[in-house]
Amino acid sequence: MSDNGPMSAILYPVAADADAALAAPLGRAAREREARGLAGGQTVSFITRPVGPDFASREAALDAYAGKVEDDRPGRLVSLPPEDRFCRLAELAVQVGGRRPTPPPARPVLKDGRRWPAAPAAPVATVWRLQVSFWKVGAGAEASLDGPQARKVRRAGAEADRDTLNALTRQPLRALRPQQPLDIGLFEVRPPEAPHTVIADE
Image: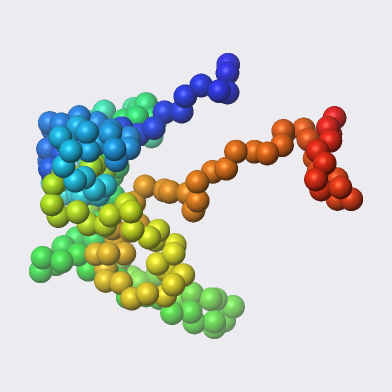
């Protein structure tokens, strides 16, 4: 089997919202320029949004979205092609008063040989919901892919609100800089005493 074949990229739906992305997208694209072409030249942004109802258990959510997400249950194993993996199930805290509560951060105790406190007796109630990643068409883009990478924003120590940080973490992975071609072969080396010379290392 050849190692030089084309890699399979996820083909994300191009749509105005998450429901349309799941039901009737304009098309599917792996890259922003392809998505912009499918959107008729309109602005697109890569986002992830929840869609559909909440499910009390992961099993119920897997049954409801059979064929759209990977299923690892014994006897019901489903493995999707790489290009179709734009949906995933997420476990979320149950909403209280219109908001999903977040547990307070745990502080180290460093007592009796334990670093962290014991888990609370009543954990936060959770539900399962489908998350769809897609190219959103039109205005309302969260974070431009031309903006800084999330790691650069964190290292700079710049203040950012929750929505901006969330948008940055949902960006597709991008290289720090364009990959440069190799200037020597795999089995060639530059000797320390003559770094301007390339010799075979076989």
